[in-house]
Image 1 (cartoon, rainbow, N blue to C red):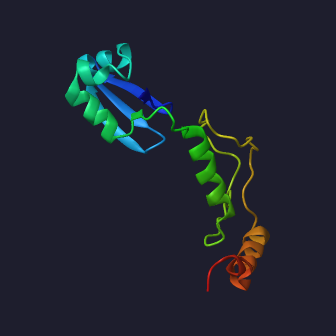
Image 2 (image 1 turned 120 degrees about the horizontal axis):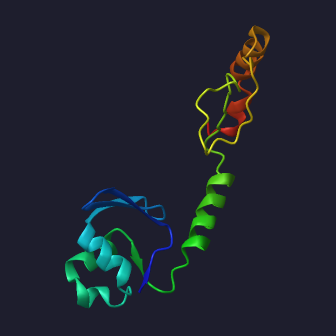
Length: 138
């Protein structure tokens, strides 16, 4: 057994940790005591150290068999989604003058930028013509 790679613990307060497993999309609350056990104990020893914790971690796929390659599985499903033509995604940025300054944002700020009426009308035309419908199932 091994600990999953895509685990993100967040300390909520003195005695509570929220764990998120990005691989299995599972959340788990652990006390500080259980958090310390999980952090300090080898995955193979957890069953002997704390059987209840071991089974919770196993159920949420926080512990995995050694031969499971999360990265390859994640890449496979990402590629499957990229090739899926049953959905069509469109993103319309109404402005690049956002005032939130989020650390993860990939957009560059452009002061005073907004969609013009002409651009809005062109977007409507594209959507109304059904160009995107050719990418969806009938």
